[in-house]
Length: 124
Image 1 (cartoon, helix red, strand yellow):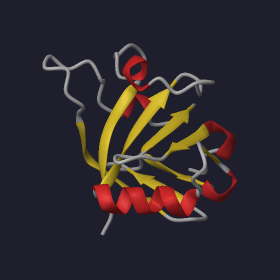
Image 2 (cartoon, rainbow, N blue to C red; image 1 turned 45 degrees about the horizontal axis):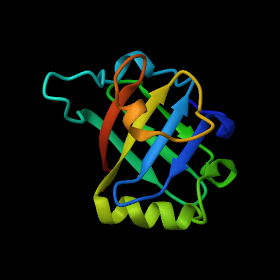
Image 3 (cartoon, one colour; image 1 turned 120 degrees about the vertical axis):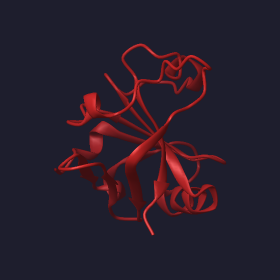
Image 4 (cartoon, helix red, strand yellow; image 1 turned 90 degrees about the vertical axis):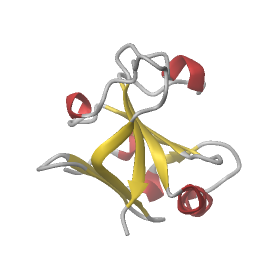
């Protein structure tokens, strides 16, 4: 499924973050509320980021293609830098949220609630 790039936000960093709103696979992702407060790994999911397109692939028919060239990349970085961060980290944290935040507050996003997702390894 093609996801509207306006529903995606790429946040660069040592472990890059991809925020998605309105993801059709929201319920298929693991909840963030874990007993030990650790970030879940999305078993059976992977991410394949490129400058023009980013593929989030899940089990079965779950997943989406995001036109990353047209999506928002926070800060001074561009999509190539975000892809480099993902390569160095071996993947990215993908979070499905109700709506994209105006200010990215990672601890608030990780506080559970309606946010779902976790770490997805790069597709080889």
